[in-house]
Image 1 (tube, rainbow, N blue to C red):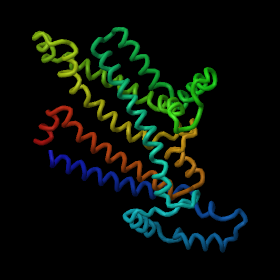
Image 2 (image 1 turned 180 degrees about the vertical axis):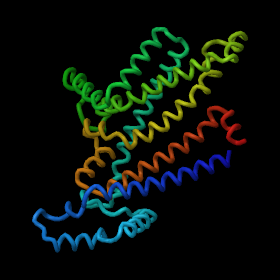
Image 3 (image 1 turned 135 degrees about the horizontal axis):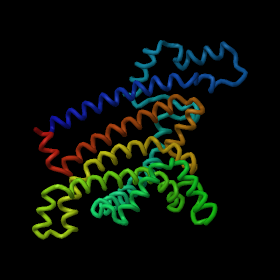
Image 4 (image 1 turned 60 degrees about the vertical axis):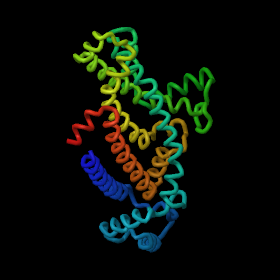
Length: 308
């Protein structure tokens, strides 16, 4: 098991190194950030002088080495849009995005897993059909359409909830629900399939023959082996929710990382985009490592298999 975790950690470091390189290269094809810092009526001498002072006239590999050195020291440069250290700007928006993504994932688990268990335990029943309809709609309709429909219904028509903003609990309901719908739908499908597969195994028939109640059968024998694909899906979705909430944050005017990256791209704020990409890559690596660790806790057979 220790050898396996060491290998996973090594793969995570390699992945993070690739993210660092890709983030550096992508931000260097966004356009010239010097043009955003100069007035419209600037001279060629002013342009060349600023490029030299910022180091953009150096070879690309030299800029990359300087970028790595700054990354090790926790210095990713200043934001040209906000005039502050880029890493501080991104970290300042992290709590909002983390709260949004964490709440969406929590709702997805609390609703998706029980609904999937109920659907898989009673296939072709009313609960199964309703859950499949909900899952199909949730994964077929784009998130921005869901967000707009929720705003029109609950904010414009019924006046129950505010249409934008973040902070108070009533402002959080619509963005969290719109962001959680796709993930919740995927969890319903995966849990349903896992439960149906486990319910067809011989040891379930034997447990029923011994007189085990249905509730105890689900909790003790069905749920844990059914959750492995759900945990994998949830771990991947947490990383996507942290870095991919651009649409939701834009529609609901939420001051998170997604909205920050969009503004930074429009302003060609290279350092902020780099910091956000690196933070998202690190989040994916950590999430995947924690997901692998959870496999052994859920199913001891996985831990034994991988240890051997």
